[in-house]
Amino acid sequence: MANATWNTTGSGDYGLPSSWTDLLVPGGSDTAFFGTSSQTTISVGSNDVGGWTFEPWSSVYTFNLSAGSTFRFLGDGITVNGGGLTINVNFVPGGPAALLCLSSTTVPPARQRSRITAPSSSVTAAAPAT
Image 1 (tube, rainbow, N blue to C red):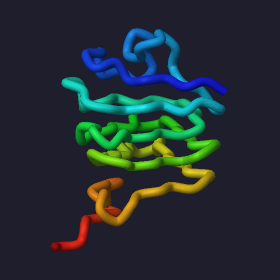
Image 2: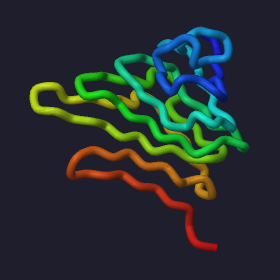
Image 3: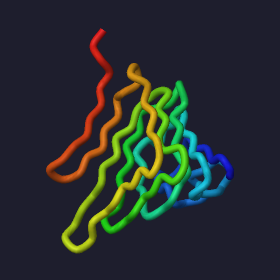
């Protein structure tokens, strides 16, 4: 198991080694960490990852899952300690994309600004009004 940290000035392509500070794309037993970055729109293709962790100082990210791709979380799932995320799952006839979370996902109530979108459906979590 290894950890990978999103490069603050990467290309925006999740699958490119240069998008990660250690030049390795995280795999099925790895945790990917996200903090403050100027590159917050990320293109994602087929991949397995242990989990994503968003640091307390994290930016708000948008992940665009390519049509025909399968992205699987095999370990800790998604942990949001700060910032937020939107995952857009793009579908085309004959080539559906899939987002599979095979483990826990933790979004503390005060940090629930995350959303997964797909045609005709949306899952949205929002922080309660204070």
